[in-house]
Figure (spheres, rainbow, N blue to C red):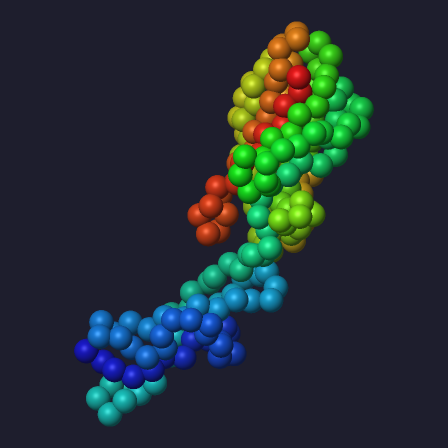
Length: 191
C-alpha cells in the first residue's frame, strides 16, 4: 500500500484543509474538508507526492458545486390572495415545519414566489446553479410541479398557487433537498 501525502487543489491553487488527513491512511486514502467564501463551481484535483517507491500522480478533475452554507430553508414572498398583496402569518422555522396562513373568500386564489432564506428569514442566494423547487397544491387546482431559482438569485420568477374549493382551505407546499441532503419544506395556506 502506498504511503505519503496528497495536495488537494482548486484549479491550480492548493486548498487549505480544515479537516481530513492529507497523509494516506492504511487503505491508501487521503481526505480534505474545506469551505469556500463564494458559491460557484470548483474543479478539484488531488496530487500525490512521489515517494521512493511510487511516482507522483494527479487525479482526474472533479467538478464540485459550492453552495451558500447560510441558506437554511425556503420561504414565500410577494404573497397575494386574488391578486391583492397580503402578509401571511407564519410559524415554525424556514428549514422545517414552516407554515404560513392567509385569509381568503370563497374560491380564493393564493399565489406566491418561493426562495431561499437564512436563519433570520432574510432572502439569500443558494448557489451559482439553477435550483429546482418542487411544489404540490391542494384545493380546486390540486397538482404538482416545479419552479426554478436562477443562479445567484434569491427566489423564483414563477409563482406557486392554490385555489380554495368554496369555503374549504387550499394550500401549496414547496420542497427542496439541499446539497447536504437535508429536505426543506414550507407550506402556504389560504383559509
